[in-house]
Length: 137
Image (cartoon, rainbow, N blue to C red):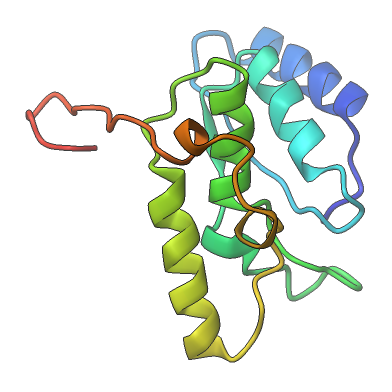
């Protein structure tokens, strides 16, 4: 719902790992109070294997008061790429998709990367990860 902070994420990840060792963990964060991205990085640092995100940051939570959206795939991938972490996500393509989606929804994306642009041109592209089947994941 967008109320958690990184210290809680680290604590919960540690407690879940102890309670359910060997089980892959996934996390889903909202950015309602601008803590979603910090929480996602804390989750990754705590060893959580998968993070949910949405193109353009669209979405929300129907039962959360004042929910403003999810963390954006392109912004999360950009942060990881700039931190030297390969995600296999082509952030430029996701930004283009968010722009296209905004036209369909007639609503600007909550995500900021599409508006701010990339810091360096090389930040906009990421080599796709190849799946076990030999096709882009």
